[in-house]
Image (cartoon, rainbow, N blue to C red; front, top):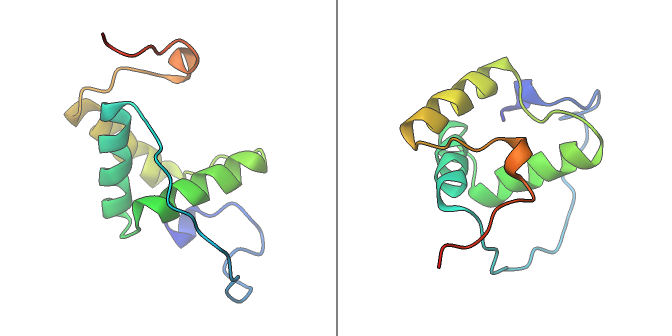
Length: 96
């Protein structure tokens, strides 16, 4: 998710915004995390910055990824054998 992937019309045109970040104990499916980490590295972002960008775009009803990112995600899903899609979102259970 580079600046060219941004969907907001005024993205990058305003100054920095001061926020308070908190550490969290987020639990996430292992292969999803691997793809997210690799995508963050690909775009030279921290994992937190990537997730914040994804969430803020989703909250606005926008796709956070451009064509380049979507191609990279497809490659990373193959590498990490991530065969899940959106239809799996509310059906994941912990392995016993």
